[in-house]
Length: 458
Image 1 (cartoon, rainbow, N blue to C red):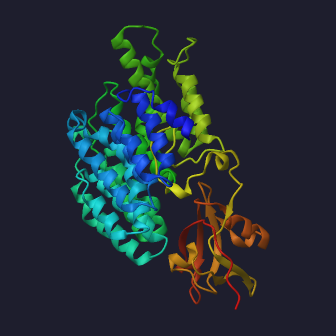
Image 2: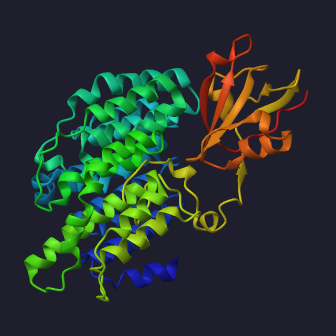
Image 3: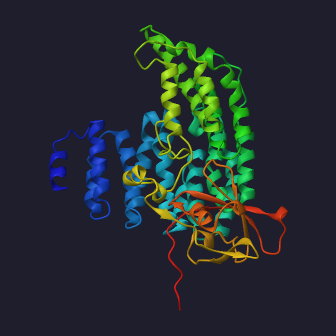
């Protein structure tokens, strides 16, 4: 670290590249030397760079230094409000703050819920405010399901009414429909009924079609992003959203293959390429075979450059379908999607070995009268925090990822255990028949896998 600091001191503080270096140093120093970390942050003279790096530092200062973390966050927020570019285009501030705000509120809520909720409510941009409060609900869901349910219910019925779809909010991340859909995985873990409400509210919140056909890819960005997100829950509905854009894909993609070098031609080509990628990526989330069919309909280009709609789309689809990728999390190269808490994101080592860390949900299983049932719910576990699972409840199906649920009676006991376990931070869905109920009263319970401590024997 001393060598890194001595080298960084020679960098010009006004350069954007220096901001990344200073920010990385600040985050590394945050747990052990927070004051030195803030000194490195204050060396950044580029306003946009300062704001972006300050958010990362504020997150890194938690949970050890909450007061200093909040101070750094608020100073960065005040600076962003003074930026001309942020005042002219608030969606740019969204790009800098969306994930950082969710991370910050989530980590802060784990140690001080009231402070985290107050900070989230102080955000003036409604899409950001909802993400901050949603992250607080995520933190609460791990320890207090009732409080998480109440907060999400308030969000759905009060905060969402304040979302306004203006021209400045056309960008997919700011669109009301995307903001509502962003809450789906959180609601899914708290209350299935709230998850259903989120799903339908996201469809209702869509922007009315303008009927434009001017290759302005922004007009379809929220629709394609929403189709991608909802495909995790209902592929038929997601396909219905995307089909109008898919039908026009050959026409839209054609300008992307231009060989002209004029600025206007390149601008049109870029928009065409971006829209093509959006549609094809969303199709890959819904149905891989459909995505391949769409690529086959694209114009072919022999030009060896980035202006190749067919080849670029193949690269994107292959990336989406690669087994190592977390398909619906906020990861590049295919853009926005659902947020995941910082501790649930795999490290570089875990990403390379996705099955290296097995986690569970805290259920002891048993077989009773030939049926798979819950034998016990371990304390301080995801299952205990959920509050809806009890001994002698029957497990009739297990689902995970984008695969359909599998009937438990088709699996051996060892296969059931293996299906419920998985990588930390991923979700498993258990179809449960509560004790004393009939199969038609079954409910689906979503649990986030985590590290579970064995039950202490007395």
